[in-house]
Structure formats: structure tokens, C-alpha cells
Image (tube, rainbow, N blue to C red; front, side, top):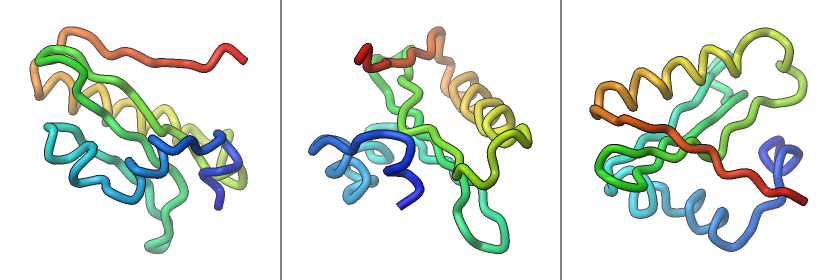
Length: 97
């Protein structure tokens, strides 16, 4: 539910979230979660676009936990992941509406 507070889920988002192995993991991507007491409170995904490019996607932090640097630490892990994959570029696609 808290994920839907951050963005409108489109059909492709729903597919990705319901089939993470097929849509992200098996393609060489990764999904990151921040847990507090085994409860997810933040997430982000790194999705390969090309062999040296990853898209940062689906990143959000539960509104109750914002302002504590969690997104920064999550982003650091995404960057480390991309570096480990020898990525030269990380892209972020935003909706201009």
C-alpha cells in the first residue's frame, strides 16, 4: 500500500512487482529493500537497459520513515550494485506530468 502512495501503478509496474524474477532478476537486475523489524519500509530496483546501463526504478520510502537518510543509503547500495556490474551509466526515467 505505501508503494502506491509514491506512484501510480501502471500495468507494466504491476507485472514487474508480481513477477520480479522474470522482469528484473533474471535479466541481471536487482531489487533492494530496507527492513525494520522484518517489515519493508523502502525499496528500489536496478534494471538493466544495456550491458553497461541500468535504470533506477521503483524507488520509494514509506512516508513514515522519510527524512532519515534511508533513500540516500538505498541509493548508495544501488550505485555499488551498478559499479559491481561495470555499469557506466545509471538512468532515471521520470513522468513529466
